[in-house]
Structure formats: C-alpha cells, structure tokens
Amino acid sequence: MVNIVHPKALGRLGRRDLFRAGGFGLAAAALGPALVSCSRTDGATTLDSLRQQGFIRAAINNEPPFGYMDDSGQPTGEAPELLRAIFAELGVDEIQAEVVAWDGLIEGLKARRFDVVAAGMYITPERCAEVAFSEPDYKVLQAFMVPSGNPNELSTFDDVVDNPDVTIALLNASVEQDYAEGAGVPADQMELVGDAAGAIDLLENGRVDAVALSTFSLNYQLEQRGTGEDFEVTEGFTPVVDGEEVTPAGGFAFRQGDSELLDAFNQVLADFKQNGRLTEIGEPFGFDEEAHPGDLTTEQLCSE
Image (tube, rainbow, N blue to C red; front, side):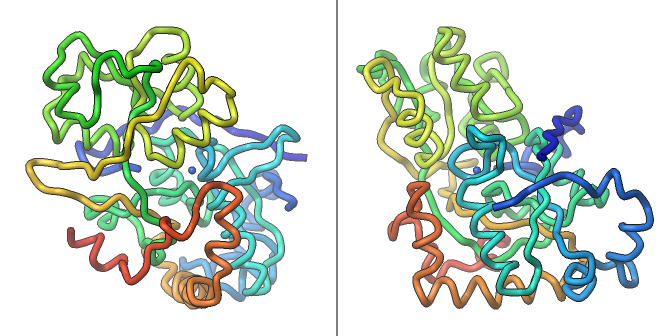
C-alpha cells in the first residue's frame, strides 16, 4: 500500500533558492523515532544503516516523466526507477516514496522527513548551498506547452515579457519560475502551482496561455493526455537568466552531511553512465542518448 502525502508548501527560500520528474510505500512516519535513530550515525545517514533498516525514504513531486504515481498508485518515472536500480546494487532493496509539493522538497529533506529527493531536480548554485547533489543523470532544454498553432508565438521567456496579455503556469519555487523572473516576466503574468498536472490543467481549462517546463515533461504530458490536436510543445531552448545562458541538468539531492551515502551512489551512477544502464532505464520515459549528461559535472553546475 502506498500513502500519498501532499504537505503544505513550506515557502520559497528566495528568488533562486529552490528550483527545478517496484514496491514503494510510506512507513517511516508510522515507525516513529526508533526507526530514525537506527538509521543515523553521528547525525548522518550511512549506507550500512540503510542496509540494516532495509529501505531508503525518497521524495517525488508527481511530475511525469521524472517521478510520479502510475495508474495503480505506484511511484515510477526516470528518477524513482534509477534510484531503485542504484540502491539495489548497493544492497538496499526497498524505496519508500512520498509525494511532496515542489516547494517542500528541499525543506523536507533538510528536516529528515526523507533521505533523498528523486524528482529530477535541476542542479543550481543556490540549491547546492542547501543540499548535496549527485552527479547529473540527465540534461534537457526548456519549452512551452501552448494551444495548437502557438497563437501567441512563444519561443522563449522574452516573448512572454513582450506580450503583457500572456499568462504562463509554472511550478512554485521551480527553476522555470526563476528563468521567468530572470527574463523579466512580471509576477502578474505567472500562475504558480504545486505540480505539473495542475499546470497542464490550467492550460486545458483556458486559465493560462502556456505552461513552462522541460521538454521531457511537456512532451510526455502531451502524449499521455492525448491532447495533441489541441496543444503542442514548442521547440526546446536554452534559458537565459540575468543575461547569461544556464544549463538545465538535474540529479538527486541528499543532505550535505550524508557524504558517504552520496559517494556510494555516485560510484554506481558512474558505472551506469559507462555501461549504458542509465539510458536503458531512462528510455521508457523519453530520456534517450541526447539526455545523457556526458562529461557534465555537479561541480560545474554548482559554480555556473
């Protein structure tokens, strides 16, 4: 059984602080302090402690194809499936998943509600000051979902700025929100929501003119919803923030003190990048060879 939890938004940490998605369950809360204490050593989560308790707690955001609940109520997507495969290699066979509003992911991680964020979170300098990221497991471009024919001729956030009548839907505390702000999109042209499904709903109901997300998210949503005749996804673009191009690429977020766990995770991820398993796991969700991050590193993304 999977319990889905939608916590109250914990608030933005600042303009660029929180940016930008087998058997899963949510049992940690029910097991109480005893479980938490057995999974900590000197305040850090270690691989040995996770092996002993038999699971790792993960947060997702319900954003296809990064991480979401499928029709049977089970979490899936590129990030949960990759997380499960990596931790299986590390001797931890169970992933317990919790659905969390986007603006609650980092705060929930820091508060020890879960051990890792598996939501396809973009790696940014501001987020690197808050959490410890794995090496990137994908790279992507940004795009808009718009009505067929793209009546407002949107191709970048600059086009939204140039047309004050256009309103776009964005995830609250997401990287897209920062991209929009960095391009100068006024607050009254942005409709902020907690997850991707809610953003697409606003577009389908005619309450916004576009949804800004990654090309992966938008193309997957378009295909799954079967609304290709009514809507389309614009060509992907590289966002510009405060006059500088940025690289949309993401990974898994761990607490800064969990360095041993992060190092073990990165070792397996490096093997997956080399032997093709990264692409094999991601392809069913649209993460093909073009999504492979190549030699891109977290150090580069954190200093960008």
